[in-house]
Length: 251
Image 1 (cartoon, rainbow, N blue to C red):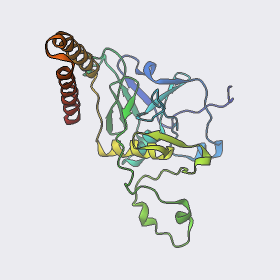
Image 2 (cartoon, helix red, strand yellow):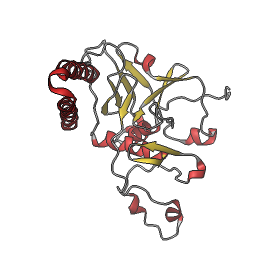
Image 3 (cartoon, helix red, strand yellow):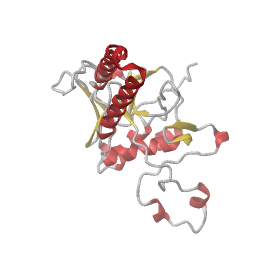
């Protein structure tokens, strides 16, 4: 039901192109932060995530649509405020219609600009998350932070996300790296890859390539099965799939 309260972005969200706001993931209601916290905060970002159909978090959305108005994600807000002059930075949603290169895509977003940083996104404003290995030193336990002899330099002057890891608090999310990762690590991974500029890209023409590959290999197997038999055709199919996977990995 309707919470009776609303929320909005702390800084303007501008757009350029063919109404990119229409392609953002829409929400009709919101559970806002406590008013005393939201009023004092320099930023205001959504904690939502958009898992794949199997429930695994592989993609993060940088912008959502709340009652028709664009609002940033938590990771996007953190990145905005972390950069120089970030407290005055604005967002810019870019889509085709103003000279944007789309690689064949006719609609949707092409980039989300966060202050001085332009992030390439899919048509709905999402990015594939580049997770680092699980053993990457990233977390500092809360009890250590609250202890009297804690050294603040351990935080390194970086962006700090405060979250939970206990299973009973229900903020565990399956990712490609872990079946039960703390949800806060997803926000941290997204912010990290934006600041590093290292993205996992899936061009819009890849789906067409995959379909063409399936049709070509399938047709070849049909034509060759009668002449060479099932064993040799199995070798051909396995080799073709391996070659395609290898090429994808190299790309």
